[in-house]
Figure 1 (cartoon, rainbow, N blue to C red):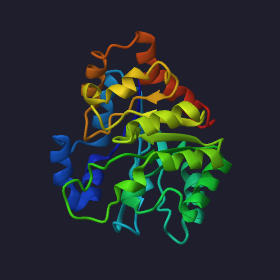
Figure 2: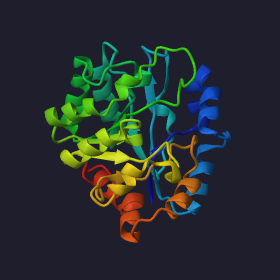
Figure 3: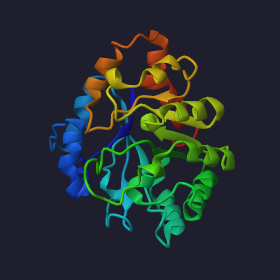
Figure 4: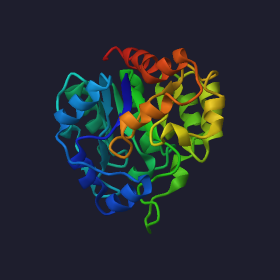
Amino acid sequence: MIDFHFHAPVREFVEFLGEYAEPAFRYFNAKIELKEFKEILDYYEGIGIKRFVVLPIDSTTFLGRRIHNEAVPNDDRVVRFVSVDPMKPNAVEELKEAIKKFEPVGVKLHPQLQGFHPLDEKAMKLYEVVNNHGLIIVFHTGTSGIGAGLRSSIRLDYGRPIYFDEIAVRFPDIKIVLAHFGWPWTEEAIAIALHKPNVYLDLSGWAPKYVPDALWKNAKRLKDKLLFGSDFPLIKPDRWINELSQVNLDADLKNKILSENAGRLIKSTGRG
């Protein structure tokens, strides 16, 4: 199995959340344990997860903090992604340097927590770099449990899936993953994934029993586009896998979700 949406090391993730940490944990009803990175991977490898897409984030200009790309330890089980704040004046150069240094499989961007509209021309310049290097982009889409219930400048509109349709048109060779399937605009995300061959949906941030029916009803049509992701530590992977076993889907389709689709997507970059 491959967990396509994993936040670790946990201590760095909690520090990044800052004032949003406790409200986010309440929102997800999550109990956070500050375990060491290797211990976490060892445990989940023991239940069958062999690879983990570990996602840093750079929100230097918006939140004034980041989980550095260097914070993710080297481990053969890690599928490395990097993150660069698109609003930095030197963002393009920094992304090129990060790609050269870390040789990542992809880039993680969170428009809401990085404070940029997905179609901002500054962001478009980063997409060009991603395109030129044949990498994947994981975009946070939909609502944000981070900042929920608090006064903030976090704009949910930046997570509307429809904006990523335009990106898929402009960059048809980039593999685009819409994390969290864009809820509450889930049907919008489904429509884009069905229409655009380079758009995928990760199912992280939701326990399977709460995933909207619209997604499971379209699962066969999206059989090659759905990716297991937990959103650890906010949702535990073992719970996610357990609940998927209770969903009425064919075993072959579940295997595609848990492993095959992610493996093929990673392999397509030539870096996996």
